[in-house]
Image (tube, rainbow, N blue to C red):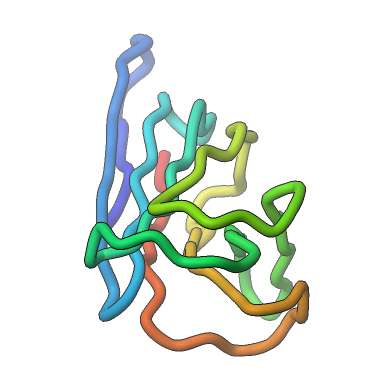
Length: 110
């Protein structure tokens, strides 16, 4: 799923995607993402570290929710991303930067 805005005017856009376990919902304008929500696909609370990854080329940056929680979802503050950055969200049992299954992912486009 892509967050896409074309033209020079200011407009809001949103994108949502679910993997097999987690969903990501993004709102923003152009390459500026205002808010990211990561939730469980089932709607059931889980305990762990919610995270968002931002991947552009071979570089991945991790953004972890500030502490371990039991929740169905959490919000993340937005940032400005490069065109073509893939954002993925999920939950991990520990703050370990590795591959996780079931993530929801979107791609930011201008």
